[in-house]
Each structure stands twice: as structure tokens, then as C-alpha cells.
Amino acid sequence: MRRSLIAAMVLLLTLVMFLSGCGISKRLFGKKTPEKPPEVLAKEGAEQLKKKNYLDAVDTYTKIKDRYPYSEQALVAQVKLADALYYSKKFDEAQAAYKEFEKLHPTNPAIPYVIYQQGLCFYRQRPTIDRDQSYTEKALAEFRRLQQKFPKSEYAAKAEKYKLKCLEDLAEHEFYVGVFYFRTKRYPSALDRFQALAQEYPTFKTAEVQEYIRKTQERINNPKKYQGFFSRLFDAQW
Image 1 (cartoon, rainbow, N blue to C red):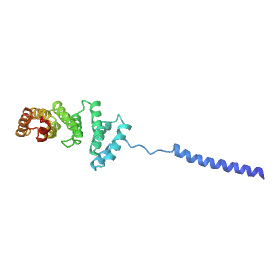
Image 2: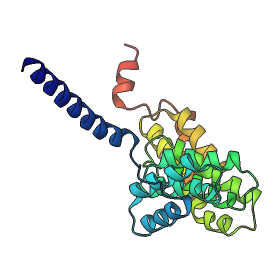
Image 3: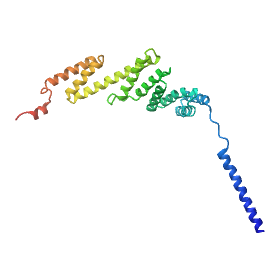
């Protein structure tokens, strides 16, 4: 009786382990969900961009790039990934993606567009004129590079208005700094700014810039006259 009970328990335990093992086996070795081919993913990505689901598009194009790097769709996916990042307003990431594509495929017909988009990535991050203009300068450099390398490209023509706006912002910044120096009576620094402004941006506020140059030079040449009452008071010899 006792032996029969032990045998039954062993049989039951073996059965439980077998059934449990089958469940684990199915989980480990069961059929996986088949991965979507690159052409299906490319179609999904295009639809996501069209519907402005930019983060989903980033994920989809990243899958194409990583899973199918040698497929026909991978080349387009690299640019579309950068586009999706750009429209997601992740401008630094987008610019890096465009730059990587240009580095890997320097003769690709899409390069004019890629350079144009790099310029826009910097352009969209321009600050107000009272702040550092590094992004404005980088945007201007990209637009100029595009027009020099591909002067007949449609994107070279599109870049013109952005280039002019960059130049305007840089001139406004120089003028802002010059006026600040003038108002704080740092006349030599102000003169340097206004003269550089007149030379680099000769059509910018010509009359106003020339008037500031005249007034600044006058104050440099006659320091006592424009020193102010309290400055003269303390400088007086008693």
C-alpha cells in the first residue's frame, strides 16, 4: 500500500513537471511573431509621417535602419528618420542624422536637400538678437555651403530667404551690442562694433549706423565734455 502511494506520488510529480515543461518549452521555443519586411515598415513610416505621428515614424525608420541595413529601403529610411526627428523638433539629433547621411553617401542626389535641412536645424534654434548667435552663424554657413556646392538646386533657391534672415539677425545683434556699449559709455568698444557693422553689412540701417559712428568718435575725441557732471565733480582738483 505504501509503495503504491509513493509510486502514485512520483507519477503525479512527473506528470506535473512534464506539463510545466511543455508550457515553458512553448514559451521558449514557440513560434515568434514574424518581423515585418522592410517594404512594409517603409510604407508604415510614410503613413506615420503623413499623419504627423513623428515619434512613431522615428521608431519605424530606426527599425529599418537597424534590422535591414542593406535593403533598398534603408537608404531612404536614413533621410526619413532625420526628417521625423526634425518635425519632432529634435533639431540637434536631426542635424546629426542628416550629417551622417551626407558623410556616408556624399554623391547621393539627396545631398542638396540634406544640406538644406541641416541649415534649417540650426535656423530653427536661433535665439533673440540679444543672445549669442552661434546657431545663426551655423545656419548661415550651411546655406552658403549649399549655394556654393549646388547653385542650380531648387534648395539653393529656397535657402536664400533664410540666408538673408540670418544676415539680418547678425547685423541686428552687432547693432544691439554697439548701442549697449555706447549707452554704457564704453566708446572704443562701441566704435569697433559700429565700424565693423558698416563694413560687413553696408546696407543695414546706414544712416543710423553712421550717426552712431559720428557721435562715438566725438565722445572719444572729447572725453571731458561727455564725462558727466558727477565724473567731473570727482575728477576736479581742489
